[in-house]
Amino acid sequence: MSQMPQQAAPAKCPSCAEPLESGDLFCGACGYDLSAVPAAPPDHPTLTMGAAGVGSSGVDWPPPEPESSGTPAAPHLPTDLPGTDSGGRQLPASPPPPHGTPAAPAPHGSPVSPASGVRFDRPPEPDEYPLQAPDPRVAASAAETAGSTGSAETTELPKVCVACRAGRVDDDGYCENCGHAQPRERDHMEQEAGPVAAVSDRGLRHHRNEDAFAVGHTTLPDGAPATLAVVCDGVSSATRPDEASMAASRAAVEALLAALEQGTHPQQALHDAIVTASQAVDALAEEPSSAREHAPHQNAPACTIVAAIVASGLLVVGWVGDSRVYWVPVDRTAPPARLTEDDSWAAQMVAAGLMSEAEAYADERAHAITGWLGADAYELEPHTASFKPDRSGVVVVCTDGLWNYAEAAEEMAEIVPADADVRPLHAARVLVGHALDGGGHDNVTVALLPFPEPPQGAGSA
Image (cartoon, rainbow, N blue to C red):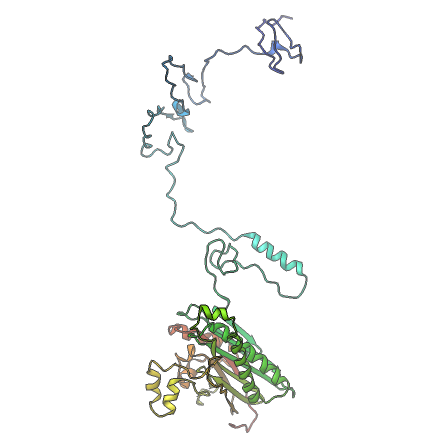
């Protein structure tokens, strides 16, 4: 077996860095075979790149050091070397600019700046970026929350932004992802309770919905059904009118349901419910003295109220303010009627014979109310009336946000759908839509109570 030519041993063992002596064939510390160590390359080898490399010509790297002149040499950059792009085309070598000279811009049409690696062939960035897809964690956490309860109670799921459908909604009502303000819960409300239905909408001009409603149905002690609706309109010039209308409507409907179930006459029950609603609104004015110090000129919370009850062949209405009740018979050949009288400046002018109805309601003071619920109201005088219609019909309970666009009873009857007695929720939506199509200048709220066919021989009370 021929012996391999002897090579000069390295100064240190390549395996353990132990110092070696000339002529050693094995490391004395780790036993490494020094005959397998290749000869050390020269200081500046010339590497020839084949077709698979970056070029076919020899390139010295690093370049030979210049003769010492006392000035440090300029640093070498990778772009000093010639090469090819991914298609095999030659890339020009661009020497670095002198110190202090700004770099020249990339040639027009060059997709890559050699010095910076920044691409210029990308499309311009858009002014607005598309919103991200819905966050699956929101839906997943909602499902886990709902599944972990294991009860029939309603679970409040995390709110997702209505605009981007990705971000969570914070406690202030804004999206944490896109910052979009979320619609308030009261901007549009709908509810059905047995045969009665109601719809309320913020309208197109107001920044919030200051109307409120409450509907319900129950059974009288004799087993007869009773349906009821309460509609309240917050007084915009007062403090927290939205709270006043909500408090009044809830207090009134709770009082009505309790009284009717105990056998109280519907007209007496409605009178007492309006008094209860007034007390609920009065209670909102009981605020800390410090609040008055910061806003001494604010009026107490206030609202109007109108309500209707259908029970045992009776139609009972009650009100304070300028919200109204209309009677629209199913047989449209019979005349409709308005069942309430406004507590307003215009109504007083007409009642006193000082103006015609057309003149009074054309005046800018027409909608100034003379009766309302609130701590600063005049002496409370609930109005109630009882009727016995002789045919089936629909009772329309509404705020001025609707009747401003259909003031006369005949006008109201024209816009009430013919099937309102069997589809009250649909009809309420149609009426709200009519007000919005007319301009939606105010909050719009309407409740519909179908009045069934009365027993034969029933007359007006």
